[in-house]
Length: 141
Length: 388
Image 1 (tube, chains in turn cyan, yellow):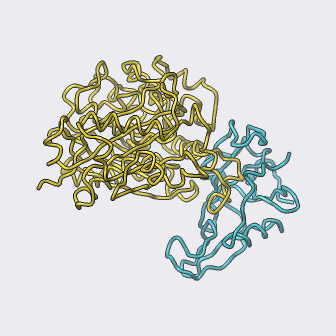
Image 2: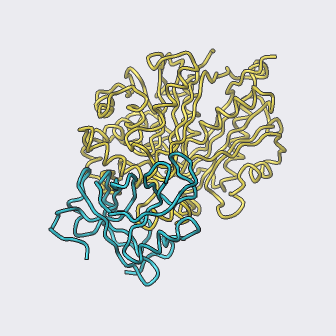
Image 3: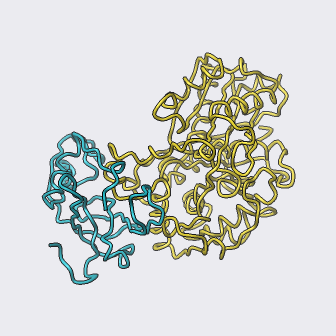
């Protein structure tokens, strides 16, 4: 399946390290030295305390499903429905929207423990994808 | 000089099966409703010196500058303009801002205007999901907007509150009861909870009948000073209080998906009006989706968490109920031209003027209007009253 070009992320000065890390199968989160916590999405100030002391930290990619929807009417004709999209509350202290791995969609319920895996879209783009912990005893590759 | 700001006229465009009965561009439709509204108050387009509008037509292009483009099209030179765009609640914000501008002496006659041909003309809401800036993290997931954001909120609401899809459905069922009384409404046939449950899924747990209509539409609201209104044809409608809030734009940034900005704005608007919820005779609540209404009713404190569906299902908001709500049929059953907020104001004023025919609520003197925009992102409450 080709990724819809109209949905391809437009990386910028705030986000480039995030997208580059995903291609190395790493979830890199912006981190506020003042709050001592990660935040999302990447930006030049901390949205909690407005400190500019912002750096990057590698996330363990563990969390809990906060909300989830099964999409039946995709925003692009190039996407094949249904598929699930979830908000995950990461242990790092922030919330991220991700596609749910198709094998785990049935187990993706509010409150389910989850972890982040990675999907290589092509040579230029990788996306985080959410797996549900213990759903089939799988671990990331 | 009494500079207190009052609403003196409203108008909207007639639709046929959800499209403009007179085929128009978004600008042409706005010009027609502006003329109609102003004429109804004994004013003309040339009297407008404050112009307030928002829209998603003509983007990219002249629609990026909607106040300038609309002023030029109308042939006016406003000395005050406000293009605040916070989604569908923009027009409740415009009313509040217009009150502020008029009372500060910056303008005398404000036109608040909206027009859309999203049903009959080119679709422009696609840029909602352009994968740039904050949207670069969310658009690639394939979450359709705005419905996907509301669906995520509904999933959390159902999981935590103990409410069911039937509770959501009660809002759509109630909307049809009002629409059945409104000859201008697009969907006038009554439906059941089972009809909503059985309609095709869009973004679970939201199904087709949980979602607002996709129609054309145009609306206008005219605001001026109480002094000027005294010489005009219409009974003035007073803005007793208003408040606005923006908690986020993208859905991952919403602090709690089950509590909207209505928690702040309803209380603040009522406080400034010197009123309590118990003093309100009627609600006009933005109903982009069924979940929008339940979260709004609960956030403003009318119902406890998870109790909004039962409140609606018991008939409180229906014709003859204790607190009539969305008396035109709302975005779910009357019309929803992309941004609906101006039509909440239009219906509220018509009810206060007693112009609503079969759906008229007798004795309604105080109306709470609440707009919700974006992905539960913005909230604006206005408290309107006839007679002052």
